[in-house]
Length: 505
Image (cartoon, rainbow, N blue to C red; front, side, top):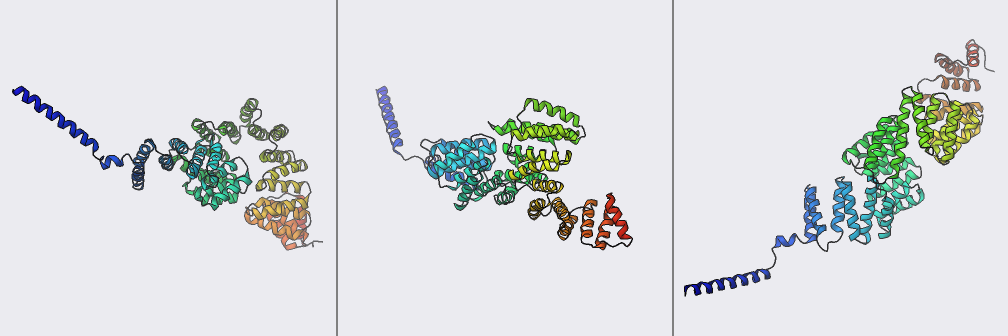
């Protein structure tokens, strides 16, 4: 009897337990548990954490949101933005790729555009394809236009890049549009405008890493490599995976004559890059720079040995030919250098630097100004904004006795680069030889204000005043030239006679 009672009780308890379980299933889920499974709430919580400075916590929440069944690409897009702000480039790339796969329209265009920009910074070769895909997803968007403008600028398509950058700017593209504008101006060789755009994008403070690298490149190209170096140091300290920054740092150090340091940065870029074809070319360039360190150390024989081996292993590398020519000139072997430079021009007929170096060898080392003029003309035509090329062309024209052409070349250079004394000196010399003495004095006085006391400038000024029959001016500047060691016999003889009271006739 007792056993039967206990069996009945057990059955009743079991039945009650089953009923309780059924009721539990019918209860609404706990609110906190529900919030953890709703993407919108996770996104809101991630925003709150990010605003409070907890970026890691925000990233974790965004990853959870992205992993939920049925999630769109929005959490991945937000995650990519956050990771990019933390300079975690590899994981940002993964997030943007996931976002693009789950989005459409403007959001997809933004994800792909951001992907392109980060891929280029990281040294991933697919950046151009990603930019084109961004525009395909959102043809009118500011982000896609900015990314494709940057890509076209890097490809040298200046007109297309500028049109896209203007479109992005008009659409309110902000810093990316300004960076794109900088790339477009750079492709068009308008380095002043490029610098302004990169600065407007936040390049000077490295707030925008791509703009900072662009600004550093412009500083190098405008002979301010020393200003670019600390900016790049800041970039790589904050974003150690930025291959583009290491590549530009290598080039800056080459410009500063530190080949060994350049090789180290090139090696880092090569170790970090993923399929970047530019890295292989950079390795050759830095090897050339390292060899040229021997020239700076007064050991040109070692430089020629290293560069000859490098040329034999890379016969089509223009940078090697140019470097070997420099080493040969240091050994006073101008004829051999010209052979290398002619080959460089043959390999790269559009290379302004190759034509320029050939002109320098012909003019300064072979004393053949007439032969140098065509080379300088081609250099200046290829890069009309480079004052070195135009000043060198003007100098060769003066020595080739083409004075009017020299004035025509040098007058605009002195306007665009008024602080370059060489331009004023050669302009003054051209006017002097053409017997335009007042114009010569005006140009030479500007040159004299920009350089330390110069025997050559004072001699030119003396002859200009002689042409004006200004005895006082001739004696003043002739005396300065003599005191500075000027040795031209004719000027010194006339100076002695005029100082003795003879009139200028």
